[in-house]
Length: 280
Length: 329
Image (cartoon, rainbow over the protein chains, first blue to last red):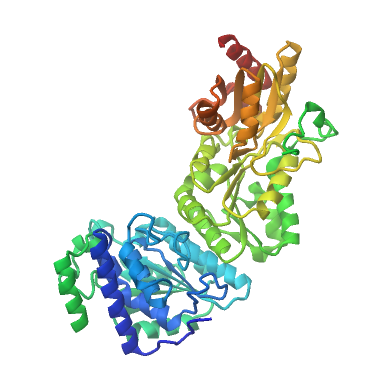
């Protein structure tokens, strides 16, 4: 059994190396696919890598292993991030990444749990992941299963009303085997989040809903690990990390650019981007 | 197959008519409580309507396995999907209009597309909701659920069938929508009836006309058939309680044996049982079909009997409709 155990990768530099690989694979598959979401995939890399490789118990050979920790990518358009991580974790051979968004590929444009084991639930229509995460966490608790549930949302995504229904539920049922993340990169398709539909103050909103809120530099691996430690120690209420991130992080000419929400690199941009990431 | 064809009106009438009518939601509440005693994997969710949907009985007995989600149907569906992914068998209940309308995209993504083992059991389907009026009368729910891949859609005719349906779907793996009612309905199914997904129950096959019904209209169709029989019109009645997957075999054989098919439902004539029957027959055995149901309009306040009258859903209305339809062919 190749169960990846907790703390297997606790070394910050190693996690940073994995994050680099994941970023390059995201860009590689998006360049090949010619469509997909670049900016929001890159912004959430460091948090997702930290969760997957420093915290989670899972077994790629037995994706439905009942004691596994669960990861839900509620911001489903960042699917390339999830696929790059799963390839790195050993769920499928790396060359499968070449098939992103192709006909009959398990790598659908947005995550599909029925086409790719290891994906916990299908996402893509925003605002739904946290509800599902709550349900999983409640189910695990009923079984006295110590597994934990992680859920990454976007900051634009939390404009969806269902997120706040789920926020109420998690606090009401004192769901503490759950850690949510808001990937706060500040941009959405139509522009800056604050211009499209203001959601500030994010921290205070979650706090008012009864959550333990931790602000974190979403690109500082050490910071992220500290926040994850704190979330595990929090009892009687759910934890959310407000990860302050940069959309397109790691590639200077994509960073903080609204238009790179939904467009992919050209082959030339890809070559340039890979060099930057290697040197970064 | 044999069971499906345990037909004949003689199959009916063994005591069930003497029993007092019972609402299918009341039966649901009782069966769910019994299921909860037998199985620890059954969990129940409700959206602040547990006294009306009757999940309150389960809630009282098993507070740890009952989740009141407040007035938040979208979150309820997602949470139910999550519970099922953790190995539980969730029953999520509220009024049909909120269950299917308010949370349709959640049902689509996290229940149907994710193919999770969630049982959506909605009460207060149709116009017999009564006095609360149009905002609370689901007349489009079957249509909304039927168009979703992976979804099974069931409309029980009475309390006997409801009990069998709930027990059956608790053992079936996959998304299910069960539509129950608020008002009391007479017993029509035989005491020893066993529901099977996708198997219609044939009371009688008519040589002249056959009424395909579901839910409360089954009892109405039986009464209408008795009146028509006196006029020499041999009228069959089929309880098509599984609207998806449709019992195509039974439907085909009934269509072959008569010149006219009538569908009857407490739902819009668009997209429900009538729609399903027409879709199938037009492609496989075109025969004239007349749809009885709500004619592309909203409901309104009133007592259930008055509502059935103004929407043409009484036995007498059904008789008139059948006669008129026969005159056209």
